[in-house]
Length: 175
Image (cartoon, rainbow, N blue to C red; front, side):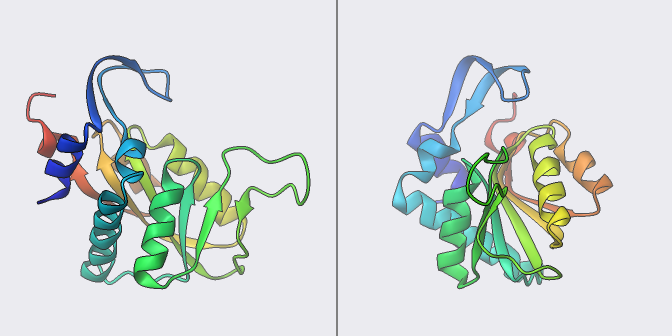
């Protein structure tokens, strides 16, 4: 069974009227969080991302994931590959170390950013900036599903290779 079939069967793709994080309206919603809470599906995602990393000859010192959707994927990929992970907070916390990255990344090291779903690429661009501001080199972004609404172009301008496991057009031809 492939990732497309698993996402469909798990109910992770919903149809109706939705407002996306970007504020944009959509006829469908991809709830990867629903799928990634299932250990078998999460393991499948991690294995496929690990395979993509091998296929594209990607080596990294860290796997990075954005809270909330990217974190379980980053953890699973870390367990699959043995590469440590870091988590990126969406907001700077106002207490403790006040950092936006959880983990202990070393400046000058490399990270692969993993994400659940991309639309325009805006949230990935913010995460890239946070990682790069912390001194990490990020050359690759691997996403489970690309909604094909601008992320590829946006990330090309950010000097990263964008690698989706699946594109929405591969899931549904009529979207």
